[in-house]
Length: 414
Image (tube, one colour):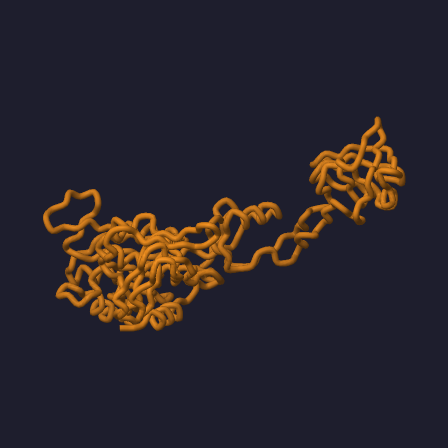
């Protein structure tokens, strides 16, 4: 049975990110949200596109107003009004000013904007009551934020709303992104039925497939639901063979323990897979099979997850989700995210395995706090897993973390 750190190292080292030549596609800007850039982006536009005003006020020549004050104001003639979106028509001469609004193009000849709160208007004249602090005050110079032809966004980043706004602003409307990794999901067990079927005595609803489907989607990957496979070696072998043919990652739940009907590991080996992990010292989630298939067009990573619902989800959060994110081409931020928090209640463990207590991570008075879920904390109790966003970690050898003490929490659900 491997330690958590050894298991993590094996899994992450086996992940080969998608290829920048073979695993990309071109998408339009409105389809690019939550995709990962496969190549750096440049634009042929400066940003701002031209010199413009950062304030409502008056565009002036700095030399005309640099020494003025309320006692000795500068008096300038207003020769033009420039709203946003209108091209200036005149060149500002000495003794002149243009009324200008925020975002409007600076007229030729003017190099500074005086905000309107420092002025008094009398007819077609503007009286400047305070000198600007410096030349080019309240002027956004062309290219000050971005210069055409330089790198705008690097490869390997997740495109969220802020990045989409940047791309739209500089008219980058076609983007080269990584394809979404394909993740096949199947559940094993004669006792399983889908949620829409009436339950017979001894049957169990397959919640794992639905939970894993959602988790895969949230990991910016494409889930392929393969359904429930009976505990029949030939049927299971055919299902796994199909899965490794069509997917980059395969997730099966159940069938990886030491029971009479746990066939997953022998089937993996019969199909040419190499098993790297058979069990990990975690609670929940001890029975975890991790294998690779190298005889495909690209390597396939196989995770045989526990059948117990909580154990399956905890194992996904701890090991699978980071692996999928790394595979997807994400250059940074794919690793598990840990936060130090104060335990609001006593946390207990047997101490022999790294133990995860699920619950809610929040902030109170600027300090992270962790509240464990109520009720029994065992891998069969799916109900109190609802609204979980953190897993408090009790390392091997730690049997108690008292209320008010610090605990490391794995942030999940994002």
